[in-house]
Amino acid sequence: MSIRKRRSPEEARQEILAAAQDRLRLFGIDGLNVVDVAKACGMSHATVLHHFGSTGGMRHALVTYMTAQLLEDIIASLQQNPSLEPSQVLHSLFHTLSAGGHAKLLAWVSLAGNEMAPQEAPGALLQHHFNALIPVIAGRLPPSPRREEHARRVVFLIAAAAIGSGVGGNLLATVIGLPQAEVDHFPDWLGQQIYHMVSKDD
Amino acid sequence: MSIRKRRSPEEARQEILAAAQDRLRLFGIDGLNVVDVAKACGMSHATVLHHFGSTGGMRHALVTYMTAQLLEDIIASLQQNPSLEPSQVLHSLFHTLSAGGHAKLLAWVSLAGNEMAPQEAPGALLQHHFNALIPVIAGRLPPSPRREEHARRVVFLIAAAAIGSGVGGNLLATVIGLPQAEVDHFPDWLGQQIYHMVSKDD
DNA sequence: AGTCATACTAACAATCATGTCAATAACGGA
DNA sequence: TCCGTTATTGACATGATTGTTAGTATGACT
Image 1 (cartoon, rainbow over the protein chains, first blue to last red):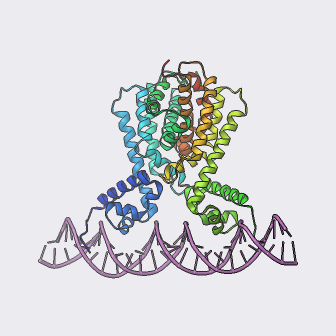
Image 2 (tube, rainbow over the protein chains, first blue to last red):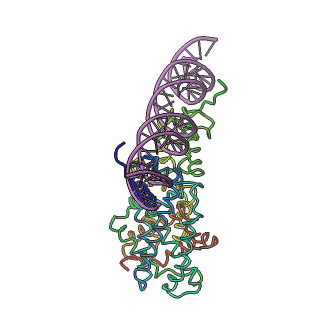
Image 3 (cartoon, rainbow over the protein chains, first blue to last red):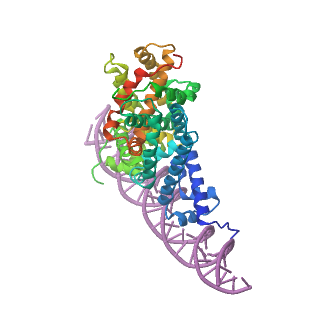
């Protein structure tokens, strides 16, 4: 038929995953079928299947792709200024997690049931980096006994709040009656609260 | 053909929605098709369509159903002991939100895109009750200027953390390296932190 | 018992998503 | 320029899901 655009396998995969990520953000989980993703790339859905084997393969690759990207964003936001105050560090961690569709990614993985296993490569990679990260954050927190455990709890709180905010923030704000301005300042406020938090053993 | 079980419309709807809720919790979003839900009820899928008009109708009814249930749980958990300390009140709010598939409900609504509008009846109802709730909680918090705003921020934090914990808690704990025992105690710890949180204007 | 409203069902039709396959066209190397 | 590799594609097969319809069975009411 008409002209074909021939890409390298890497280009093709990259192009497809970018389109898939876009569709996940815009249309939710329903946007992740091979026909629509292929259409968004201007290619045939058979091409997508050629590169990823199956729809599940594409989705799995997307999880890996977005997880790696999330990891990069987190690392970058934490390393961009090593002398940041912990409140600002966690503030940027919050933003990274709740923005850019990452919260939706986790919601999706959580909803997808058992098929989308998070115990594989991406999860292990994240774990590895967090293990290196926790001591750094602990070192920036006010001194306390069991500093590391405290750091893990704080990071868990920030991450959970960020995810929850990304998943249902708008709905929550409406229901609770929190003005938009307050929502915008929420990460800052939360960052400041870190100073007032104490270890369980204090 | 063989024997039929004839129910009242209310019974049928109730039975169907209960099964749908179960399937959402067990199998995620894919479990919510009329055939499987009907099979779980021991009825024909045409019956489900008869009562809800369409698959979307069933799903929408499920959102309403689960939201109302969530509301009931929240109200119950907050009213069961009016003299509870704020830390315990918010602690039980946390549990109610993160357990029982409520977090998954919100994740699903968030993922479903625009079709599943939360600005309708259930949202308005929740909003109404929260408006009555906030002053109560504010009254139990340590005195501070702009007590109510502070209460809204605190409730928002608790709720967001609960949702995030319900959606990705297991994954987060693994990645961060927070032991299961710490995860179990997390709500308690968070409840205690309330005392140390300050209003923006303090 | 007779009758009426309707909950219920089987069978069918239609649409959609997934996956296969043989054929083709683009690109790099000989 | 020729050739081999393979990215790409249209057409087809298949199964899953949704929705429709005509008819049946069931319980309530007279």
